[in-house]
Amino acid sequence: MKVATCSAPTNIAVVKYWGKDDVALNTPLNASVSVTLHPEQLCTTTSVAGGYAAIQRTRLWLNGEEQTVNKRVAVVLREIQELAGRVHGSKEPPAPLHIVSTNSFPTAAGLASSAAGYACLVAAVAEFYGLTKEHEEFPGQLSTIARQGSGSACRSLDGGFVRWQKGERPDGHDSCAVQVADEKHWPGLCAVVCVVNDAAKDTSSTTGMQTTKATSPLLTYRAEHLVPERLQRMESAILARDFEAFGTLTMQESNQFHATCLDTTPPIFYLNDVSRQIIRLVHRYNAQAGRIQAAYTFDAGPNAVLFVEQEHVQELVALVLHCFPSSPEMAIKSSMALDRKAPQKLLARMEAPLDGGKAFKLPELPGSVKMMYVSRVGGGTRVLSESEALIDGVTGEPLPFHKEEAEGGCPSVKSCFWTRLLSASSLEPALRYAAVAIVAAAATRAVLLHK
Ligand code: DP6
Image 1: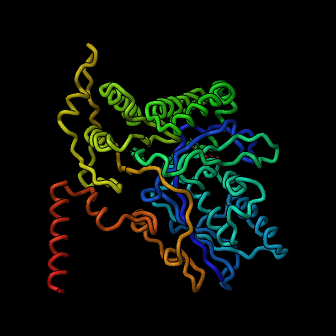
Image 2: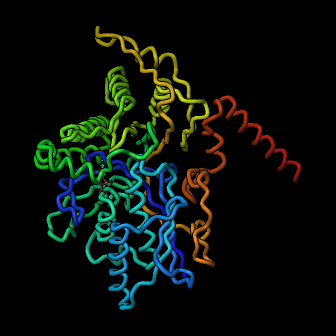
Image 3: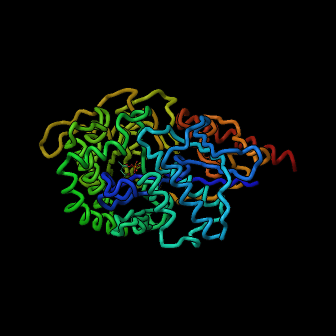
């Protein structure tokens, strides 16, 4: 009887994967590069249990709902179980498992839930069978298994900045993930995730990219002639922590990916009016700063991920909140204390005519950004303790699912009380500091009384 539990982060591609070379192996038309986001805000947790009398067949639960074990999950399980059989020299057929998974963010909303989901499945099943990187039969083997679950998932096993190389071998063994730089490399890089629409997307990535491959000449040209050079420039920008080069390429990549979607017959529209207003806003923000200070990227949905360096994150968040104001209770999940009010000076700078050009009208679209996550670069998958398991260690059955608790963050990386108090989104800054002061005074008094 055993329960293994792991967490996995999401990642956001800055050189995009779109189009498959081999559908059965799920290898890509071109290599891609991504940034792993910190699990404090966005992550998946998965527990795997086996060896209990009550487990008669393999079953899977996601966010409290039982799911059918689909083909991709079955392939991931089979590949890891076969590897475990070879490593441990066992010929026994694998026992059925219970697999329980939760996301700390809305599933299938274009927030790379399949990336975190399959990376976490690989990590937790591997942990269940006692497999680590040392047991791999070729470099990156576990990432090639995650790739067969969902392409982008292979980039979520590692932290920092990760390349998924296209690979040349017919068996797909070299179509694996390679870390470009770890999570400590660029600590000042922040990612502001703006949830524009948290409903499930219209066209799934898998279907969308198949139609694009079948109909878009731009996609083939891009994969052959444009991506190889962009990939090199992107990796150099990351290694040099050159935000201007990184940001420029990130935006060009996002735009070219959405151009291939538009070049598809029938065209695929992932961006909406709010996404386009965010694009306009970021370009104006950079123009008034006279340099690339922020960059946007969009995947298969309208949600924006904005990259910005730490010194400008406050300004950018306040600007987005000014243009897309939500209720004062709108959740901002962040480990940094952020002031919601945009300074008057910044608004005036944004609207003033530039170089004799036209004045800029800041967008006003109340309620259109529903939620924000302010994140930074984070680490890869992690093994969690027994106390963080989603399965009852005595019965092997799923523990009750609590949506609010799951969306509150990932176990063991949940912000401490102080950070949560300081960043409590519904509190005005003055109120926040007053709350901290009151708690601090009460604590001091308690300590003094105790003496
Ligand atoms: C737009 O990894 O979801 O996010 O391999 O079919 O599961 P499948 O596709 P998926 O595609 C992600 C596409 C993207 C760009 C990217 O992450 O590189």
